[in-house]
Image (tube, rainbow, N blue to C red; front, side, top):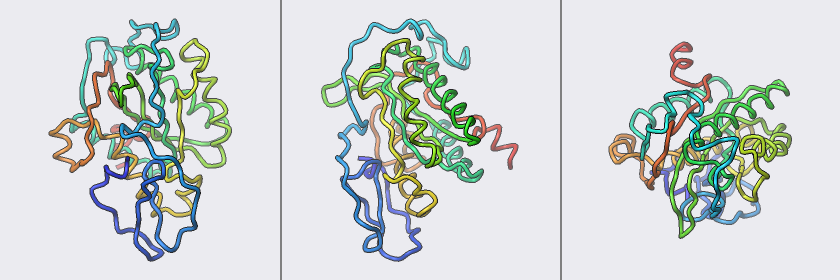
Length: 275
């Protein structure tokens, strides 16, 4: 569970009571004891953490062939292989998360996309994620909303089921636009892969388990976001985990091309310009 990724619970509650981690809620939902109303419990995540581990054998797709270089040209070439998040990766992702909040676009949603199950070959995963975030940003822009995001790729087996290549994405999606966005996602996946949508390829969840938590209870949202980000960083190298005090570690697997990324508005260049 994501809760295991948190070394200690931040003491940031403003309304009194002790912060308590719910073991049966998605993405490490936290509530303030005695002051939060009861909510319907959610089924626990599998030990591997991915919401829906599935095993599809696919032959690849025309839209994203195994020879695709994807977004970023040479940065995603087929011989660029990694097996873990580095110290530089983690420093960048943590700084990006802080900057997103600083510019008023805090991450509010966690999305997992099982690219292998959708028929995307490992070498095409970076391009597929890039197209998905482009479509998401354009859809939100049509409703006069900005966004920010970061993502991490993994390629690992789990509990006897080969999940293969998949993406974990944290994004800013305003609560009033969630239903419109989620209604479009399956269509985006059909466009990206060139194949019919397959069940359980995408899983989307509000961070903290409730829409609008970032506005209604910022402290509670911050605790849940910390847990969600720690979950995305679980594929860190031993050196990176030691440096950043990461307690939950799992193999991230072999990834071709970019292993992680952020939207430009919270990337290193944007952060430097803002500072």
